[in-house]
Length: 175
Image (cartoon, rainbow, N blue to C red; front, side, top):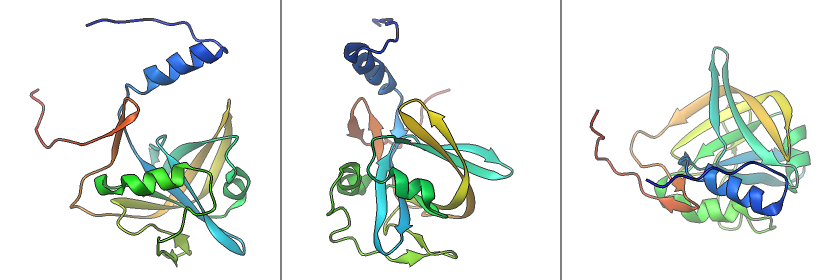
């Protein structure tokens, strides 16, 4: 197995190599949604979703500081993490782009106890209230307190690895 080691730096090539190395960590894909005062809801794709704490129940995700929806997301009193199912690649791609047509054809309305915006067919949803925000270099790290969650036991997650969507196999790995 060939290995390579690269020093981190601020130049574009070093950043690209760092991103390529990060791509070796398989992640699920989620869309963060939030109501927007008097307008179309916020919706952005993230692959940086993680659990933080069970007591209290906390999660985190990070958002690029260049994201057009960052101001709305930073100011909201509630947001949801929608974990995408394998068949939702189109949803992931749609919300990964900065355009005004993200919600075209997606029928969702505020749901949940506090009016969270939940995507139909998501594999799991986490309804959250803001807990903390932290500077994370070129990103803002959001920590949310989970107030409600639900999961569909059937279905397979959308996986991202090596810069591509991948399918999860049900074959167990030997210990």
